[in-house]
Length: 165
Image 1: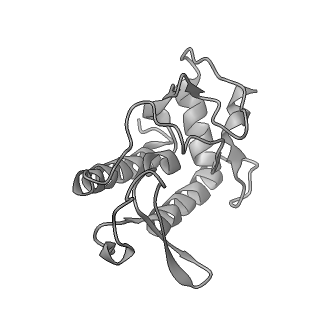
Image 2: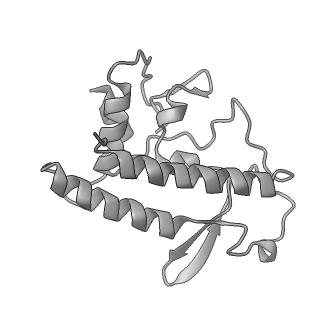
């Protein structure tokens, strides 16, 4: 029997593989380490991710924190309590992200990383193609909603802090 989240987990694994590859490629510029939580926020995620996290956490003891200033409820003592179940957006943090914004390509990277790196040195080969993976996630979410007859719309995003309810 296959899990209703199998394709989502496959996509998550692809994100992890590329993220690991890019982390290795940029290791001299990455300041990310255990305890760094600058990017740990109360993100909104598609229903497929929300439901996958909800299912994965249903039998786990997690001390959910109150979201302070938009911080993630799973952040405790500067550590992610759900690291293995974290959403895709959290799996790409710190990396140079390439995406389309207002009809032009935009590059985004953590302010702690790439402090001595020229923007012209970024290429499609050494950045994370955010739009590509977000499109795949959007399409998976559409199928997931139809197959599971859920009342969300394909454009709904759910705040992670709703998992606390």
